[in-house]
Image (spheres, rainbow, N blue to C red):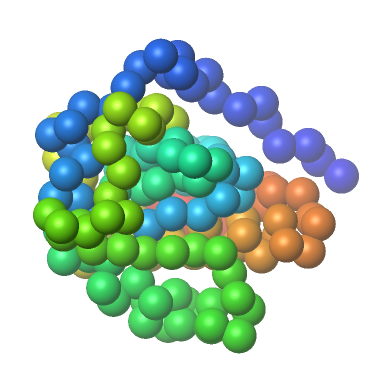
Length: 158
């Protein structure tokens, strides 16, 4: 069995998220372990994951406004139905939403552009959702993160 490559270097935990990138961003999150596995898979494939934060044991992928609402339907379209009970959550950012954490309580896992770039027009969004769902399912089953030879992945760059 081939071992996954070592994790890429991460920014220092002291590096805090900037308020301008968090507020007004939709988000999709997963438990930290599967979130890191999905992020590493996307980086291996050369796909854009956008900015990613660590917040309370979860990896939080920031999305462009208006992107979170169709995430459950997109997961179902990719074959990841609700019956699998995956711990992937999506939430739209609303100014009064108490679930939006303060930036000072989050650390970057991967810094990104000043504003999130993944939206409904981005094929990288589908790759992100598929990688997150796969990593969560593998984690739930006690399997190691997926490692596939380059070129055999649906989301690989052509």
